[in-house]
Amino acid sequence: MLLLEAGGTDVVDAVPHPGLSPTNIRSKRDWGYTAEANPAVLNRKMMLPTGKVVGGGSSINVMAWVRPQARTAGAGRPKSFSERKSGGREPLTSALG
Ligand SMILES: Cc1cc2nc3c(=O)[nH]c(=O)nc-3n(C[C@H](O)[C@H](O)[C@H](O)COP(=O)(O)OP(=O)(O)OC[C@H]3O[C@@H](n4cnc5c(N)ncnc54)[C@H](O)[C@@H]3O)c2cc1C
Image (cartoon, rainbow, N blue to C red; front, side, top):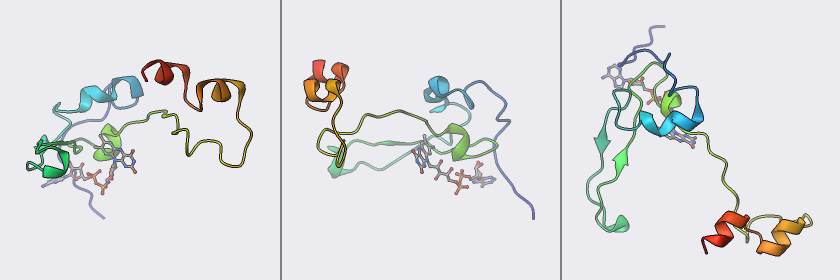
């Protein structure tokens, strides 16, 4: 089997470190595609990050910790004190409204 991948090495800090992953977008490790204007998103032309590096999209995708919405969190389990106090949201997101 022959695997061809355009782009360069994945041995750069931005590949293994989640905090740096946004710096891959529109870098030389991204093909740099942009979608057509779409009425579903107010006619914006959304970026379409696509990996151009060893590992492809897997090298530039993102790991993020995202708190679930209150209506989906905790189904079937007791809420913690901070969840009850904040209505299921983390204090930061509660503060943001
Ligand atoms: C920013 C970002 C966030 C993502 N987040 C998630 C997520 O949260 N959850 C999830 O499930 N998935 C996520 N994905 C998607 C996931 O990474 C991709 O679905 C997956 O990597 C696709 O794998 P693939 O092997 O099909 O293609 P790719 O990883 O795109 O690999 C294709 C390879 O072929 C190369 N190539 C393309 N054209 C040519 C050519 N003409 N000549 C030579 N080489 C070429 C490319 O450079 C690339 O190396 C994300 C992707 C990105 C970019």
